[in-house]
Length: 86
Image (cartoon, rainbow, N blue to C red; front, side, top):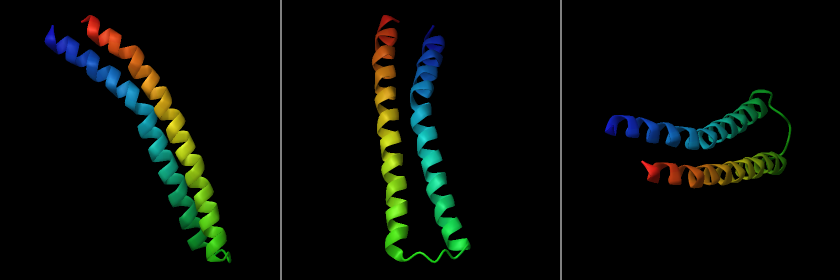
């Protein structure tokens, strides 16, 4: 009984945290790839436009993170009553 309950709780937690983890990894990879591409190709942009481009990516990344966190919170709010029923 306890192991089944723990497995279900772990499953719900993993499903709830999955979008946040994926969004964090994807945004981090995109920023890293962009910076590597700019450096590797020696793009002749000055420092300020590079900062603006990276800042825009971070803003979009933050927006994606917040929307994903909101979805996670809603899923968690739906999962808590299921946990309490056990």
